[in-house]
Image 1 (tube, rainbow over the protein chains, first blue to last red):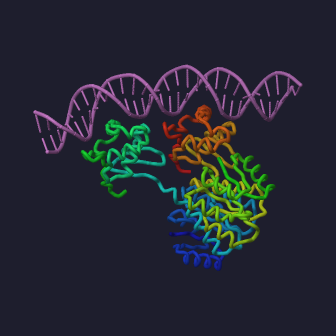
Image 2: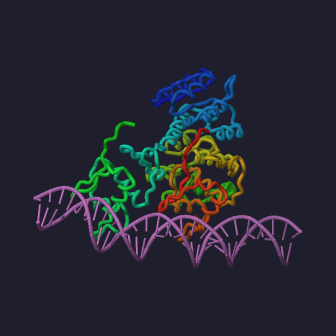
Length: 223
Length: 223
DNA sequence: GCAACGCTGTCAGCGTTTTGTAATTTGTTT
DNA sequence: AAACAAATTACAAAACGCTGACAGCGTTGC
């Protein structure tokens, strides 16, 4: 996990870097605001520690420019004084947390961990098979980037199969997961559903294993 | 936006609740740790405010049990003055931020907003989707820079959806984050609200996922 | 105090979409 | 060829979401 530290005080920078490295982070540290700005814009970090009291350049300006540049990484801001207004300003500028000086490095580490933990967990939830893509967050299925309109049942079917790609799913199991009142009696509802889905999606997507169930082939190539 | 407040001091609890309600939140407040624990485990909140100095039960224990139960909502911990160790402990236990007493309620509100934003993946207080812009700090929604007059309920709806952009929000969840009375029974209040909002904002903003809920599409363009 | 107004939830009607069933066809296995 | 599984088609009932009208309620202004 790589983190960026921008802090002009040599001593403090060394302490912080040491603590972070001890905590298992890979640290890039600089005392120069310009350099820090540049690094944050062009490199990829899991998080950044930013001192507001930099000589020459305003720390908040750095933060804002990162955000404008589309950088999303969480930023922990270090404030010199306990100025309430400054803190709120920082948070509104896009800081994820701030820490008033003086502080204990253990606390900095704990806080940094906290904001990193927050920033992940928003991993994109997409599963793709061939040209078909499933986004569970948006509950959307698209082929070659073109969204496909699916009914609720159809979506559930596709989602379940794709999330279980590479495995043969028995009809019975499918029916059960479509949480309808249909899964008890003898019915061809699932078959009908499969047909409807195939009409809307690439036929090759869903494979029939006669006598066993259905299968979405997992020939996922990288990406 | 529904939040949970656990604080045994009656006066403080009242103040905090009032401030949060003034800020547009729907507040569940309790002074009883057990009840708070239970609420946090079983209800859905956008965030929680948790006092560590509770009589009877340890606040950190509550937090840990929430995390064990898989609850992800951001938690703002209130600590007695100057107990650093306590703070670090709290953060390691899964707190997202802490606020030392005494504090100004304005700061509590600002911090709570910050951790909520962070928890849904946005750093700044402004969220924009297409031509529509939401400023949670000013509680203002504007289209192409032109402010749109929304009723409180309408604002809450838009805010919640936009803060959760890119994710399908079930009607049920939506109702729970709006206001008390309506989320109990079978009602089409949410649908009515949606219609009213659509009349005031670009129709394309809110997408209906029939059978599942509503969605604000996250086709994030720069910014 | 009274009238006007805005907010919010309920309700009923409407049009559309969805969905299971049944009937029929296609395809595969033995 | 018979037997069976699966695919397809057509259909009608049910589910769902949208809308306009309306009533209760609290607030504001005169």
